[in-house]
Length: 100
Image (cartoon, rainbow, N blue to C red; front, side, top):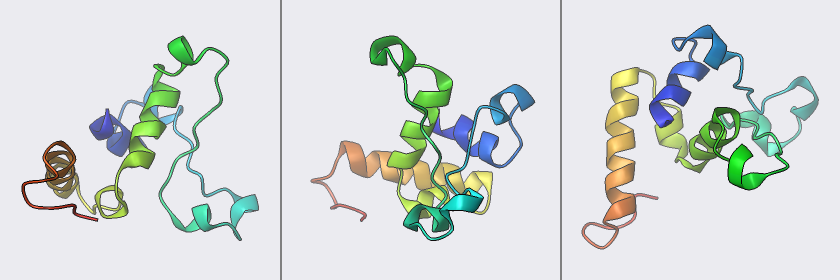
């Protein structure tokens, strides 16, 4: 899912997926902290059990949970490497320590 979100934010995913992704950096948010990040808007849902699993909700939720250095990767290969490292540390925090 994170890989699809990277492709959707960079325009390399299919167009129907790119249309579902909205960046939190909107013109009215220039003074907010979220205007300087690569975070995405998570739409509200009425039924979290069903709506929370939909791509427009689950994708931005996963994307926003990633570290900034993972999200801001300059290339797909760098993103995959940083994502793998992030997930490794998330699963095994006691081995090496927290990357944050």
